[in-house]
Amino acid sequence: MIKARGLQRRFTSRGRTVEAVKGVDIDVTEGELVGFLGPNGAGKTTTLRMLTTLLTPTAGEARVAGCDLRADPVGVRRRIGYVAQGGGTGPECKVAEEIELQGRLYGLGKADAIARGKELTEQLDLSGLDQRLTKTLSGGQRRRLDIALGLIHSPKLVFFDEPTTGLDPQSRANLWEHIRTLRSEQGVTLFLTTHYLEEADTLCDRILVIDGGEIVAEGTPDALKARVSGDGVVLGVDEDVTTRAAEIVGRADGAHDLVTTPGEVRFRVPRGDTALPALLRAFDAEGLTMQSMQVQRPTLDDVFLTLTGRSLRDSDGGDTDTADGTAANGTAADDNDGNDSDRNEETTRVA
Amino acid sequence: MLRDIWLIFRRDATLLSRNPAWLAIGVMQPVLYLVLFGPLMERIVTSTPGFPPGSSWTILTPALIIQLALFSATTAGFSLLADLRNGVVERLRVTPASRVALLLGKVLTNGLTTVAQAIIITTLAFLVFDLSAPLGGILLTLLIVGMLSVTLASASYAVALTLRNEEAFPALVNSVMMPVLLLSGILVPITTGLAPDWLYAISRVNPFTHIVDAGRAGFRGDFSVDAMLTGSIVLVVLMSLCVYWGARTFRRENA
Image (cartoon, rainbow over all chains, first blue to last red; front, side, top):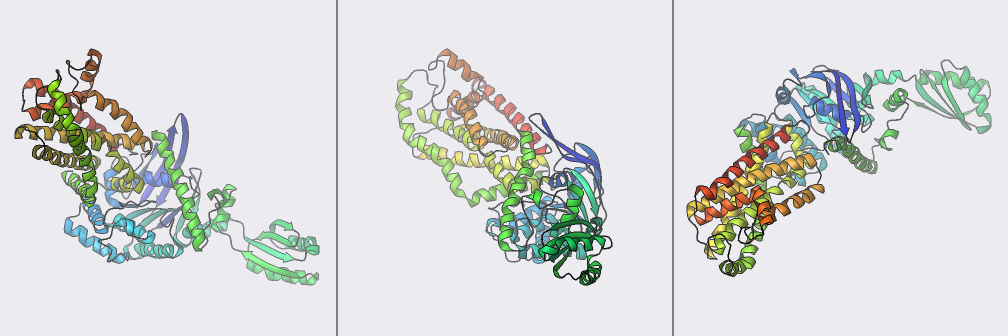
């Protein structure tokens, strides 16, 4: 569905050249749900804009949905759907008007556009909103309308740019369901960008990790996590026996990256769940007590940390995907910042 | 292509009809000129040598509708900046619709809106004030106004797309349009009899002067080559250039 080779984009503004995307190779096969994960400013949106014909690559080539990106951009446009990060509806337009216009711009007749729109609004729980101005819709509704617009011509390949950014946790979970359904029931190939670890983890078959304009890793979420060497284990002990506890841990099979602070021993081990019983026995034999224990399965953040030496959360301004409302609101503001900086790259170039 | 133009035109026209207040506000300013400035002109025109032929109303009315075209069309870029912000432009650009159609549909809306407003103002000048002008001439001037609106709206969209800045855009438009407006002799015609030589010379270089002259000639019913030719040529050339500029900016990859 997508085959890109050496896709590159350089922006020049006032004599300064920024390499937003430094030559990426992307392969997506039919029916896949692929996530493009990276911090804001990593080049996700720029890559997506190149693949959707909105931005001409500085170098490299790609075939998208069977058409050559450079030779036949109109062919690409006809075959793909694109749901932009900030949406794309006029606030003073009625839902039905936007849907009909979109369908007709893709060449559907008036009746077909309306019929297809009706089908989509039912699928996406937008029934009964036809005559509403889009500015009166809730964030989740508006995002689903954006998706309806992107699907109006039944494309086989759909791009989502940060589909759930700025949505509350319920709307996000709801949207994930819709995205899954698209793939499972209609066989649509999906390519989405995200900087939410949870989203990449639970939604995608395969993840491309991008940082600084380069793809630094790719694979299934599990395969990526397997690259992080083992589980993280945190043991709580009495402060005065920390050193002795660390010695015991140091003798354990495969334990590494040992770090101690008074009362706490942290280390990595290939299988935390099987390592712990043995450790408990060893502690018992030495007459030590373990106050607490904790095993952390590797997360995609660990993957990112291993690959780049930075935490995805850190590079994102403390943005996390915690599932509580206030945090989600906070991230919405952060996301907008990120969005702006993404766009600024292009704006400054023009100016 | 024509279908795409029509679809975009219909979208913009629908949006406009949803907020008719904007149309009324656009008409307000020329009406105020007619009411509060027109009576002054009446005296001045008769007592000052050097004015072009015709009554004060045949001099003022066409100038006011051309000024309306200048104001409303040059600020058309504002709506585009809002569309850019909302992502509407991106969304439309990712459809197979022709890029040129995305522009032409919009400028067509601007052109027809201005003509509609111009008809209201002309009718008012007829009914309330002492305007007398031949219908053919008025239609010709309305055509000029429509074309001028298309021209300037295209340029406005091109500038807005290039600038992409909602603060800088009005500042730029103002600083360009102010001298252009003054030098086109819209309120007081810049004639050899009234203006010093240097001012007259500069005003002749301003393409809009010739368009204003042609618009006035239409209201006088003067269809002579002398009165119409320069203005028509200037307008057609200017319109072609601006529409080309706008279309090119719309087509350019990052627009």
